[in-house]
Length: 222
Image (tube, rainbow, N blue to C red):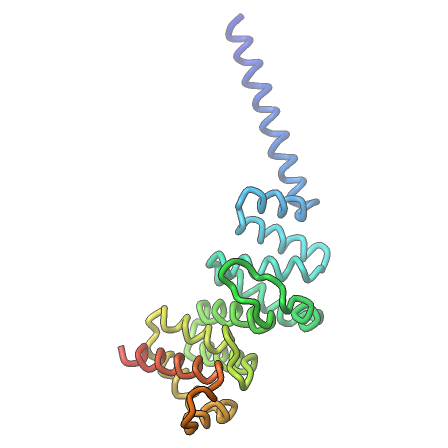
């Protein structure tokens, strides 16, 4: 009799487990948005980002693609971040989305900056980390430069790329960035500020530019 009871219990538990797995699979496939919110509520950000990407693939809503990209970048998943950023950047709604996000709170310890610059900074870091050759790294630099203004705004893509290369102890690439950065016509106006006797006339961008130059010089010579 006891064996029959235990057998019935095991069979019941097995059926419940199968039904639970089936329900989870159905929700994952049919309702990734719901699973995204559920995973986020549990603090499973990386999984939440993956479900967001599934929802984007299902609905085409750029909001989910942006979230999926940001999560992958922040969670240290450069392969996923680079892939999703390419889709994000090439999406026809990218510029409008960035404009709509300007001035929004981007999270703790993240200053409210130009969102496009912020997104391209994360994208440049991810693309650098997955770059498989010197040519690919140079392409990332060219991209970062194209998305960095003449004013060298805070947290710009070139600055983020330089920091990533320095943290990776990539002395050779730091040297490449340094050489290019010191000779970019785009920053001629910043360099002219070096001739100003009154330091109070220096812009924030000029000070940041000098900091990055110093950082790259140190990293390139290590």
